[in-house]
Amino acid sequence: MTDLWQNLKTAADNGRPILLYGMGNGADKILTVCESYGIPVADFFASDGFVRGHSFHGKVVLSFSQACEKYGAENMVVLLSFASSRPEVLETISRVASVCEMYIPDVPVCGTDLFNAEFYEAHLDEITAARALFADEESQRVYDGILAYKLTGRMDILRATESSPSDAYRSILRAERFQITADLGAYNGDSIRSLQDYAPDLRAVVALEPDKRNFRKLTEYANSLVDTNAPCRVYPVQAGAWSHTATLTFHGSGNRNAGLTDPLTEASGHILPSTADNPYFGKTAEVSVIDLDSVLTATVGGDARLDYVKYDVEGAEAEALLGSREIIRRDAPALLVSAYHRSADLFSLPLLVHELNPSYKLYLRRMAGVPAWDINLYAVV
Image (tube, rainbow, N blue to C red):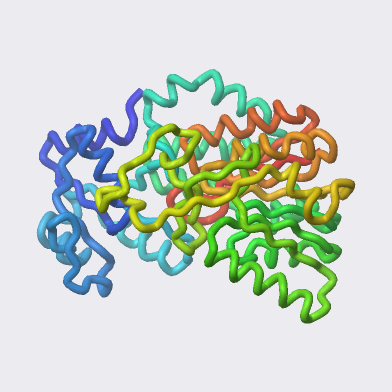
C-alpha cells in the first residue's frame, strides 16, 4: 500500500515542484512531514488578491497566477495547507484544483502520529473493529471515505463525505427531546445557540470552557439568558473536561482551538522549555480540569439526568469520556464526540464509547469543509 507522502516523494524525485497553498500552522506541520520524507517544497503561494508582500520560511509568497507562470500549472503539485468551511473559500480552492494537481494532506491537530500507510496497517484490526460498530450504511460509507482520503489526500473523496448538521440533530440525535445537557468545550456559547434551534425544550446546559477570554464571552451569554428571562439556563464552569480533577497546562489562544497543550500536559511527562523556541511560549497557563461526573453535582444537582453531552475538547475527548463514565453508564445520554483531533480518534473513540456503554448505537457524519475536520461520532440508545 502506498500513501500520499510516498507518492509526493516519487513526484519530487521525478522533478515535479511541490508547492504549498497557504501559510501558518497548517503549513508548518506539512513542511515538517515533507522534511521527514525528504520532499523538497519549492515555494508557497496564496490566492490571487491575497498576496501583500508576505514572506514565509524565507521565501516570498507568490500569488497563484505567479506560481503558475513560474512552474506551469500542469507541472506543479499543490498541497493545501489551511482549513476552511466557508463556501466562497471552498469554491476558490476548487478552482485551483481544476487547473493543477492538488492534494489536501491529513496532518493531526493534536499529537504526532501521522495517518500514513504504516499507521493504517499497524491499526488495521482496530479500524476494522470500529467500522463494525456503526449502525447504518451511511456511517460506514463516511468512515471508508475518510480513511481513503487520509491515505490519498484527494479532495474529491473528502468532499463526498460531507453532510448537514440538521440531519444529525433531527434524525440521529432527536434533539427535540433534550432538556438537560452538557457542552464540553463550549467556546463562547455558539454550539449552545445552535442546539437551541433543534431543542425547543432545552432548559439547562452545563458548559465547560477553560480559556479565560472564551469563558468571559460564555458567561456574558449565560447572563443574557437570565436578563431576558429565557427558559434555558447556562451554567458556565471555567475548567477543561478531563477524566479526573487536576491542574494541567493550557494553550490559551482565545479562539475555538484553544485547548490543553500537546505535549505540554502532565499526562505526557514532556515539558518544553520556557523560551521563545517553545511555540507556546507566553501563551500557556495552568488551568483546572474536572470530570463531568463531579461537575454535574456541583451545578444542576447530582440527581439530574443528562439528555445529551457534546465533547469538542481539542484532543482530550478520550479523557473527557472517561470522566463521564458514570453518567454514560447511568443515563446513557445522547453523545456527540469530535473524532478528528488525533489520528487514532476515528477508530479509538468509537471503541471507547462502546466499551463504556455497549447499548449505544453509533453513527458517523462529517460536516462540510477541508481538511477532514468536524468529524462527529454520535451515540444514541
